[in-house]
Image (cartoon, rainbow, N blue to C red; front, side, top):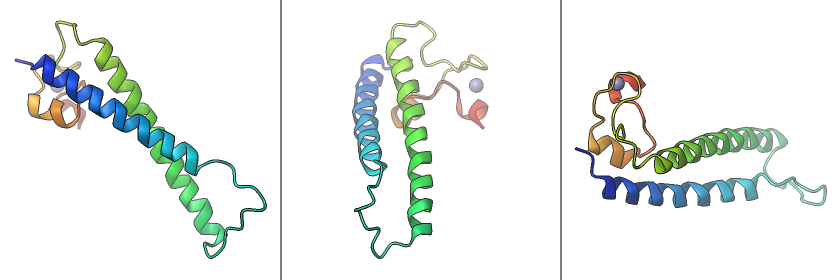
Length: 108
Ligand SMILES: [Zn+2]
């Protein structure tokens, strides 16, 4: 059985966390003005960092979308069942990754 109250709590926690993360990434990836000397960081490093940040930002946004879909579907009777095979997703997995809609086997 799915502990809906616990899952709802985890979703809220993760949504807040992910939103904070996204805000942080957006701040970091704000356009650099010409006056902002890159300093000791080489230009290549700056470019690499930006690519890494953008990838992390895209991932965080994707996670946030999934979390919100999950939150909107809390009353769905199929909640906690794998979208692919229909088997229950273990509560332990949902607590760690409340955005998961596939069981461990199907997500591989
Ligand atoms: Zn499955």
